[in-house]
Length: 104
Image (cartoon, rainbow, N blue to C red; front, side, top):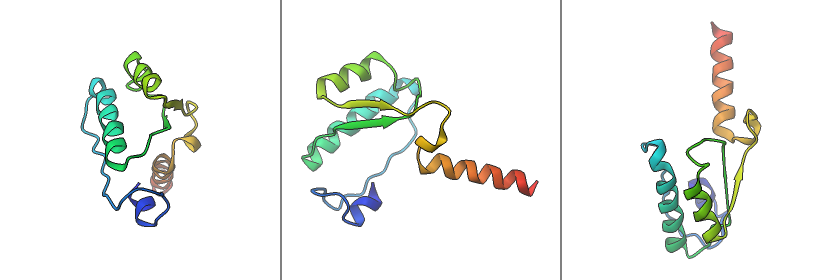
């Protein structure tokens, strides 16, 4: 997100610094994501239209479904066991693991 904002690839978003800290437990994840969405919408005056996440059970619950329905947000899941759809971080992680195995 920071890279997109810094390079001017997002229209209407001011030069804010975004940071996501992964220190919440599984039962706090939905509440934290809801807080993040509401904060982004109020700060940037833009509507979140879609959320794409992996198939983690912390995101597949009634609370998230109801929140997304209420806010008219598309709640999309990536296909299970396909790292191609899970983003750059998981591909880099797979590359690092393969490199380590090769070195061993």
